[in-house]
Image 1 (tube, rainbow over the protein chains, first blue to last red):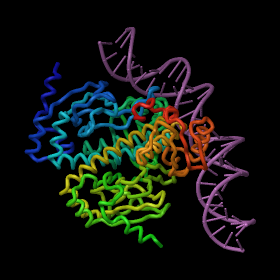
Image 2 (image 1 turned 180 degrees about the vertical axis):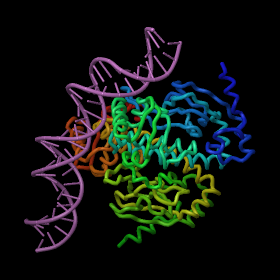
Image 3 (image 1 turned 90 degrees about the horizontal axis):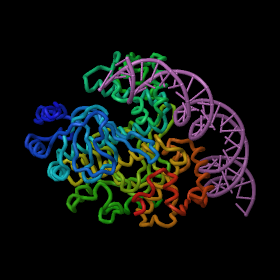
Image 4 (image 1 turned 120 degrees about the horizontal axis):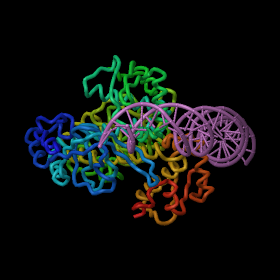
Length: 248
Length: 248
DNA sequence: CGCTTTCTTGATTATCATCAAGGGGCGTGG
DNA sequence: CCACGCCCCTTGATGATAATCAAGAAAGCG
């Protein structure tokens, strides 16, 4: 009902909450204006599929608010999450016409979309866009490689601790929180989504979360609200280099 | 002894075997000339470490010949391969001063290196380089995501079959081979490297290779020379969508 | 308040890791 | 040319970790 109202809330790029972190971050005023010409907002409800793998993609875009996941599914139903899309993250690949992964909204999501063909044209003529996209893609590649170590070599307990650290760190940077005292955040994922992220079953996720709680590494209020009394302990459980630079 | 000779073999970009696939692929003649000014060749012997994680990196570059690996290692020694670098692949990250991963030469390797600072300058002024690097990085990200499915959700047997398919496909495209008859190739990796690639132990790799051999999916001459009588069967073992487009 | 979705916990099983021993190829040196 | 040693690989026995199967509790929602 109010949906259409929400759609029009964020029309002006200057008021955009992701203005300085998204693919448009480096654009000058005139470049932004050209992006405005081809942009439109779309809203997706929690649980809704944004794009099916294999579907034709005629837009690319940025997550403005909410959380979405990128997943791959095998024929027999086994699924692996391969990307977690947060506000300012980019969706879609210039130069490719069909989606390679399922994109699903985990919470309500607002996306700032660009029609693909005009966006590609603009990118050819606007180095600032391509430069920013390169930077973002390199960051994602680094994240993917970190993730590969988690998937390939860590134990279930370490996997859970790793995921919690990642979410805690992100929340801290987004909300200007600090990492040297107790850290508190909400899990944006169900146990099943956590399992798909980590290559585990949801039962194992549940058990390991309980174990970390029993050992005092974390405390829970309800199932989703997590407090980490001492980040150092959590990072040790994750098997990461002892706090190396992370708390700085 | 002949080493220094080899170093000077590939001095002219026009004769370069990776000219049309590396980061310089889109460059015009004048752009290439500016790259020539800042490039130099380096050779690494099999087993030699190209860069240690955490080390200062004052160059970036392309693999000209040979194979190198990107690996991460945990404090207790567990290691995960996160990249397999083949001829034309790019090493290093513009805008970052220290290496994030160990780079190790698996075979003898020749690299075409660019001093980092001049390369970054040149990239700012040469969209053709940034564009090509973006394309290559997006491809790597796709490969990493495919790899994540393998690490997170596939069984040991499927992992081995997946790796063999990847190598077979690559060999076919490099050597203009076909994938619709028997396919033959050499494994460029030891059992241990395969294990680090797949998140397994070398014993499990050995057992699963033997099992695929016993079941007639592959045949072996020696330990490294593999023949796949029927790619369709191997792809089925890998758990991939039944040959979908792969044989085209 | 009842229903569905999400989560927890227990019992059992399967898969892969670990520990252990030995085979085969290859280069080096006697 | 052969013997020795080293590296890489194979195979077997055993054990640990996480998956599977199953039941029920808690939380969210109409």
